[in-house]
Amino acid sequence: MFGLFKKFKDGLSKTFTAIGDKTRGLFGGRKIDAASLDELEEALYTADFGVETTEEILAEIKTAYRKDPELKGRRAAEIGANVLTRVLTGSEAELRDGLPVPAALPAGETGPTVIIMIGVNGSGKTTTTAKLAWLLKQRGKSVLVAAADTFRAAAVEQLKSWATRLDIEIVASHTGADSAALAFDALQAAKSRGHDYLIIDTAGRLHTKSNLMEELAKIRRVLQKLQPSAPHHSWLVVDGSLGSNSIEQARVFHKNFGLTGLVVTKLDGTSRGGAVVGIWRELKLPIAYVGLGEQPDDLQPFEADNYARAVFGLE
Image 1 (cartoon, rainbow, N blue to C red):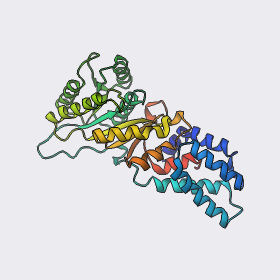
Image 2 (cartoon, rainbow, N blue to C red):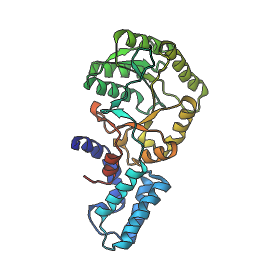
Image 3 (cartoon, rainbow, N blue to C red):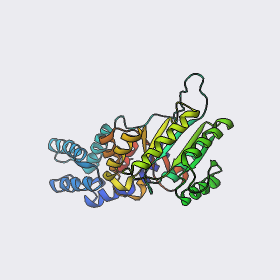
Image 4 (cartoon, one colour):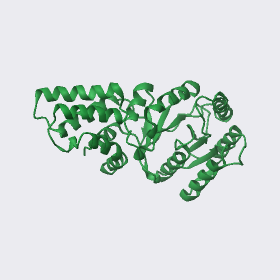
């Protein structure tokens, strides 16, 4: 458990450091005063926690400060983490031992648990696909990945490279191939080979492009010809460094495709780690995984308590 928390603490260090810099190291133990409360308010806004969450954190710290004028920054950090954990109640996606829950298939239906990865270009979708496949493989699951981002040769080559590096089975085709047909072929292969999971990496698309949204719907229809319950998990991969700008993007994808969860990437490279909270408050979409670094094992199941304590620099 400590090892997992260290992943969160290291991955969110830029957010914690940014808050600490703006508050002159408030959480290091110095006493709270009016000026430090103003500094903390600014720091939380800058870290993209949003108005509602920032006000809730400050309200509870101010209440504690009125009761105890000797209140130390360390106690304020604990209060902040408790508020975040409370706000994030229900935000953790349902996983089983840190893995996507296997599909409960209807009677007579066979096949793998199908996960479809969705997102805009640059969100980290292809890398996340590979890391998730590696996580499944490390836990003894058989997994196949499908390079259905056929618009970009670079995306296919990137996933092939990851698959070779991590020894993961992959189905791919040439640039410009029909992505729905590739997804169909991949599901056929996963069924015939008895794989536990199929992860489909789709083309990056802007949420404003209706033709690309229709392509996602086509992939779903084609999958359901072979396995009516598929896809079982439809996850939007969101770049955490975009902060609250990701909210509208996620809202449109959810309206058009019916997302079942989120993966928030690149939290290690941003000081705006509070975006996780804003996305949850706005959309109430559960967060399955977070990207906390560049290595395969830096994709970790989201845990609200570990996240909250890491943001505030607690052990």
